[in-house]
Image (cartoon, rainbow, N blue to C red; front, side):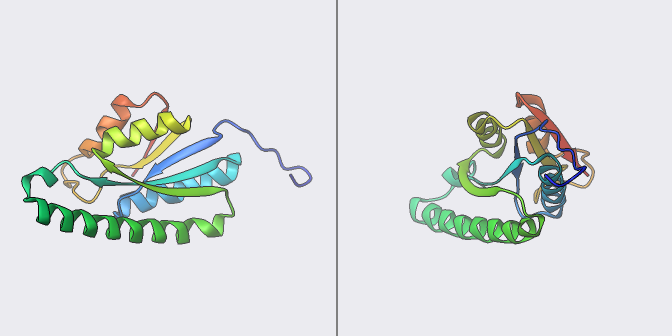
Length: 149
């Protein structure tokens, strides 16, 4: 710490799920600011949504999953480039499954004290205040959740 600088350690670990939407990048920006202010570690999570893959034939499913993983890696790479200027400790990870369930499970595994999430993701409908994933995370999470507009 520098002279006169006071740091509070309210949140030692922050989790931010990101799907490539504008709302998720706004949430990432807020999470990075909070991580810098609190000296927290930030984990950036991308969840490959596999809920609808069973509707496809096996070969189609494998091809689609491969494309979704490539897209997820691109989203994480972009997220990492946005976070680097904040000079914080961070990691990024990609998991597969139901996004809301995976986000809550990951927060529990990491013992994150805060999830910072956008109001709605790529599939969000404008008429909805909160997307279904965000709503479920708010309902199910055992830690604090900050929803960023």
